[in-house]
Image (cartoon, rainbow over all chains, first blue to last red; front, side):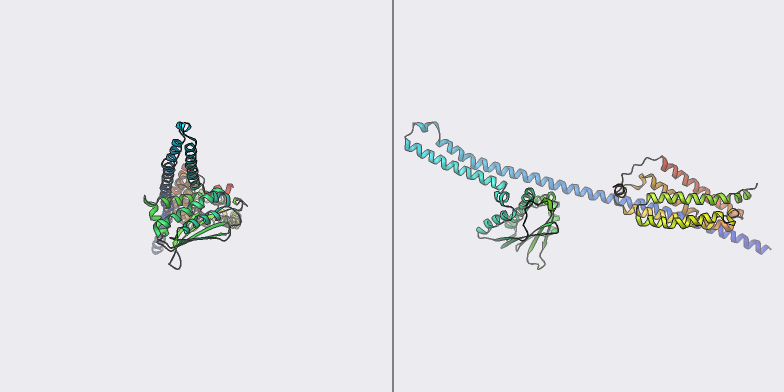
Length: 280
Length: 173
């Protein structure tokens, strides 16, 4: 009887123990789960905030680069107008002063002829400045002609062999897109000419699955995506930042890499283009 | 009427409570979980479970013993639903701080209550006649019941500061 009572009591103690430890275990599991969720989410949010900050920083760098580029461009135009067009017009004015009427007819004709020559030169100069701002070939005949034109001029110098081939350019893009793509190509070519010591530049164009591809190859000293990311964080590399800010406007991806053959460097510009964005 | 008699009288009410609790909270989880797969799972589990609870309510043992098996299954199911809810929230990186949402606190209250009461519930049917067990049961259950209601109250009083997550925005679209 006593043994039965003792066994009953010990069984009850056992149940109490199971109840206590079981409940504690389950509660620990539940509370642990809740805490894990909260801390994990806080970590994720902190990471996202950091990512956002980095993105904002990058935007700021790109914006600064763009402003600096604009300022440099303005200074260049101002210098061209002030140093070239200004003196030319001033000289023309000198030829056409009030004393001209008192001169004999042959001197007058000579002065008018000289002034006309100077004004023609000034017109040509202003046209060149205007063309550097918006190439007329690009506006009138499209990207293919503009790139061809640019490459012919580069090849004409004889120092580098530049060629381009557009495989699928049946329809023109929107003018602002074409201008941005052209500027990116211009900047890339400019960088190659300045830094790479390449012997050739070759540009190819393709259109595939609503994406407009421009691939640029050269055999000089090039950069890879890692170099681009490193340069992005530094204050140097204004041209590169401009390329990226233009790519951003185009919603395009730009990738710098070494070719599979490891001989050439390759830059790929991938511009998403909807059908309706194209102009026949 | 002694305490034990009163408790025995309450067994029927316990079963009715389990049935209503299961229906109400299943509906709540159907509303707060957005994954179609989990929703279908809840619906599929809900129908046979409801039938079982109704059968259990009208069975011969309904007014003389504690409904350990139904209560245990219900606790376990809600524990799993809570994990599914958390899993969904953790994967939704667009959702802001979880603890700004009253729904999160409701689920916290539920997971604490159902996790804590799982063991007392499954042992209750066979040990409800032991006074020691009854006092342990009351201590655990009542404490968790109070905690659950405090958290519910906190959730009801708090203002929903959570910005709509991508899930809810997509649902509205």
